[in-house]
Image (cartoon, rainbow, N blue to C red; front, side, top):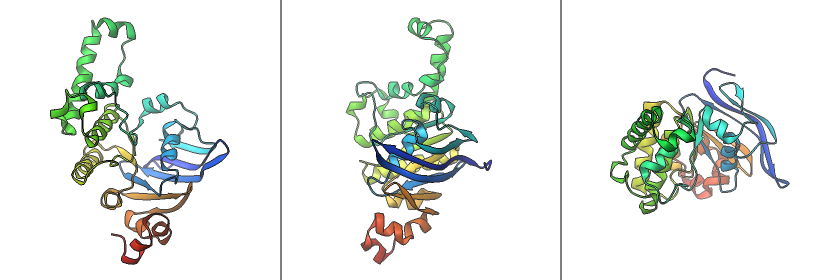
Length: 263
């Protein structure tokens, strides 16, 4: 495996209940880059992320993370080794504050046992301080200061999605799987999201695999694009090349876009 390839999917397939979801999918995510996975509804994009994160187990092929095959690992193990994800819906604890929702993401970093955490003594206090400092840094990074004490249920949906992103960052991943992070956002919220994604890429250096429907965001941000349709890969390449591929335009963007060109 090329040392500059952070994660490689080799020929994975997935069937559920006799229904074929993915067929012989391969992709390569270079270190520190943003790889977008696009395609129409039902193309298998989220299922691909589910296979990488261990929620689904692919029926065949390999998933290599830093050269190690992780196909058979459980989701919590995959999170611990450095691959975390966001979800199409924020999936927050609705009656917990933003701060506490982010602290949930720190659980995999906590070393003290349940008993010592319950009594909150000794080294547990020092560990709590460290994790709270890490969460406060994420709150500042994502410009969530004014929401830090608010219950998740009280937040605008777009802000909830950013909190979900923050919770994933709290796990300190080396690879971040983003599942339609802009869904439900207005244009201003999408512009904020774009800034945060670029900061994650350039300031933190996290590799990202990004399922997205907003083609403007994909065209502006993605280093590479993989296109799925009906569970198969129909195109890949740079954002501009992939978005102009006739098969992509026909399958996903529509013939009207093909006539006037995709930018």
